[in-house]
Amino acid sequence: MTEVKTSIYLRKYGITLKKSLGQVFLSDERIARKIAANIPEDSQILEIGAGAGTLSVELLKRARKLVVVEIDTRFAPILKERLGESDNVVIEMKDFLTMSLEPYSSFIMCGNLPYHLATKILERVLTETKTPLCIFMFQKEVAERILALPGSKVYGSLTVFVKACARVRKLFDIPPSMFVPNPKVMSTVVRIEPVRKVPEDFTELVRRAFSSRRKKLKNNLKIPQEIFEEARIDPNMRPENITIDEYLRLYEVVMRWKKTFTV
Image (cartoon, rainbow, N blue to C red; front, side):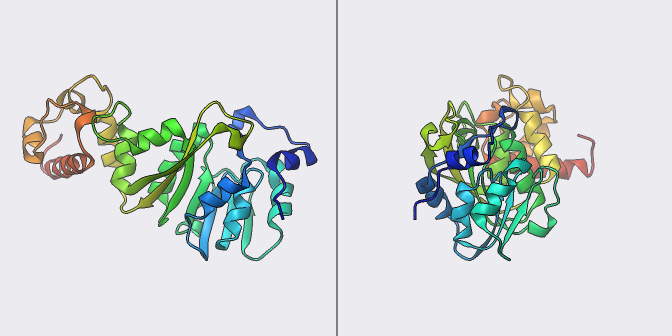
């Protein structure tokens, strides 16, 4: 049976989308199936930003338990209709950024993330959960920043933070025509597999390093020459030319120095 289109559900329940919430919903069931296929069967899954449930329907087919989170309570009846009532479905009409994640900490995370909140959501997932896998859809520009290589113009603090925490891989792009309403930008689905937690001090060090891309690393960080020497990093390099492993090594040296000196 062909799934009813997202736009039909919106008309049925008289819902107009809110620009303030960045509401852009996937409407193509084939893309939803393609996204869901990246998640192992019989998984516990939490979907962030379920919206009208197009992706939710496909995730449910692969889930031992599916939790869908949606901030806009107007979508509750649509989600209930499309997902039905079952012991393996939980509908949370809440703000993902403020809700308790403890019950779902080890769930696989998936979702079409709101463009304007994507980095905040990703940071919370990587710092506050024990998820083994994330399949997230981002605005293509954000995905490019996450996936960037050293020396790239878009390689920055977000790149270093995410890649220090996880293995990342681009899956595929999605054109605007697959959404309601059609956004002005392409979207990209990214696989993120967390491998470690990084301390808040590391994140702050990286932010300081990228505080001015035109300046050399030594001018942004303002730490002793001896630290750079011990970390085997040229202080005259610019922040976008330092690899993930070099940032991790620099952080370890800074922490050792802090035990004895004030850096």
